Amino acid sequence: MKLIHYTIGRLSWVLLLTMAFWTLFFYFQLLNEVRDETDDSLRNYKKIIIKQALRDSSLLTSHVDILTRYYIREIPEEAGKQYEERFVTTEAFNEYEMDEEPVRVLYTSFRTDNGRYYELTILTSTLEEDDMLESILWSIIYLYIAMLICILVVTQLVFRKSLRPLYKLIHWLDSYTLGKKNNPLENKTKVSEFKRLNQTISEMAMRNEKVFGQQKQFLENASHELQTPLAICSNKLELLSENPCCTEELLDEIGEIHQTIGRIIKLNKSLLLLSRIENRQYGDEKDVNFNALISRINTDFNLIYAPKELSVEIKEEGIFSFRMNETLSQVLLTNLLKNALIHSPNKGIIQISIRANEIVFSNTATDAPLNTEKIFLRFYHASDKKTESTGLGLAIVKSIVDSYDLQIHYFYDGKHHFSLKKIR
Image (cartoon, rainbow, N blue to C red; front, side, top):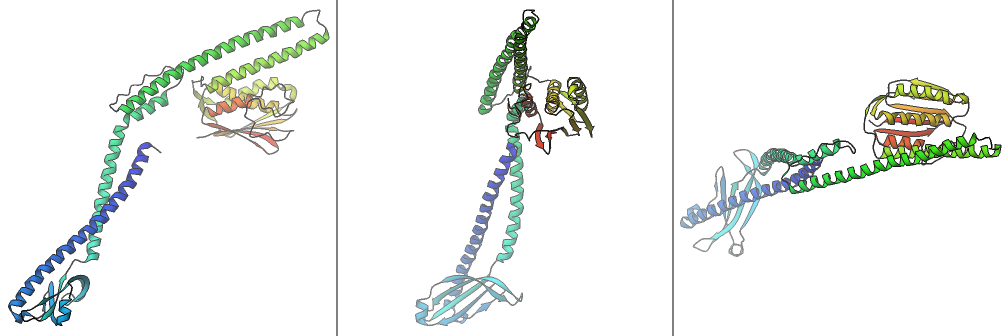
């Protein structure tokens, strides 16, 4: 999830809760204000009625009109002295509308000059609370949605503009490749945090370039300094084996030493290749046709493994094409096919199924299933009999796969299967 969407989502919840609270607060405040105004009107009307009744006793009668009505009745002296004025909201029948309507009622009492007590009940029509609630509710909802949309749209626009330096920095990092000529970071901004982030990223990139250069130099030196003396030793052993003074036992010892040196040379090359892959020193990429590459590699291996009389069946159900370094693609397929050839019994069958998004290497097996937790680890040997294996072939495969949008999977159903798939 993008930062702007995450922030807008969080902000939306805050705005929803905040505006919902203020909506309820506004409604109840409005309702109280309406009731206060109605009560003030009833008090004023009470004063007018009592003043007129005290001036003219003939007005001590009830009165009914469309909006306001009042009723006067005489009450005992004791009840009049203890009478408490009160307001009540209730419903009353309206003869004009022939329906119940909400009214606000004031109950009060007063005493005339002759000492008699009267109860005065004043009723006035008030707003229909249900209708008012519905009207206010829809008005607030419309206002609420409009304000929310405006706030979120404005926030997103401001947020995008404010975070433009961050997006530019991310784009620069996506295009940055160690060991290549990269464009300098030009990301002008007035925000101090972004300035410091740009500076930190630039300094980190320079440190990585320096470390990368040192590692690359070390690998080149190691490749030269190790392979050269090993090659010299191998040549000297060959010359020594041609000496007429060598006995048969000495020749056997020289042969074992020569094999050991050869294995060390292969191991050295594999470890250097692993280091280069993990340090991403293979940057050049192109669209590679794996179908054609598998056919070419298989042709080369047919000569090498001819004594085992292996049968390789290639079934093409689609074109597997992928963008990656061509050298690494060749190493990847070479190791997978070589693994199948080495671990197949004589006269065995190797099947290669090629689809648009998957390649499966299958070979007949005489041994048990491989350990799925260790199979891609360095120096893991499924069998101690395979002395010609360095134990790095599948580790190299795993390292290459992890560098791209690929995945390798092993499964066993009487045969060994290695599935190479595109992640997307």
